Length: 151
Image (cartoon, rainbow, N blue to C red; front, side, top):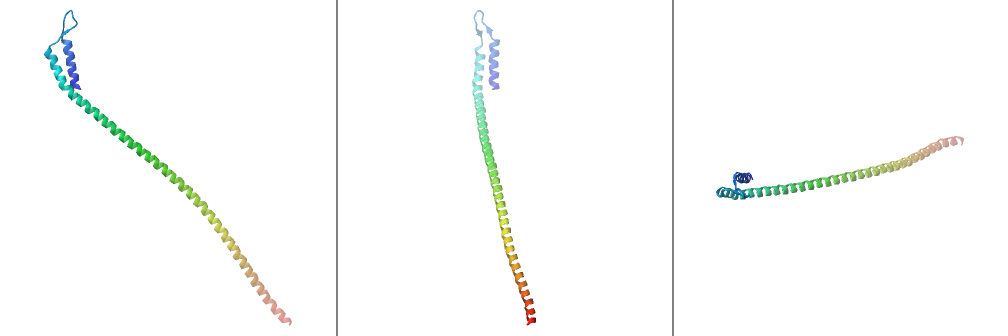
């Protein structure tokens, strides 16, 4: 690009330094000088165009890479967001299940303790009956000898 600007400046200087023809709005320019600059421009322009095309291609490649990277980042972010949501859902379900198990365990403990209390009450009643039976048996044994003494 610098070569083209240099050549344009040379062309501009050539025109500025050319002589004006009196009475007409025209310049007197040396043909060899202008043809020399035009020739150099023809040589420089394709190189400049090639360089500009390379720059445009590089820009398009960089933009495409940036878009791809952006899409990958968005997908990763979306996946991370989905994973975070899923982990929160799993935690919520785990807490709910733990609470349900706790409630069920508490109910089981209460029921087991009630059953144990009832069983112990039954055993206590059986022991009480046994004690009463033994006491009656002992009392009847003690009464029998007194009757025998009367006879």
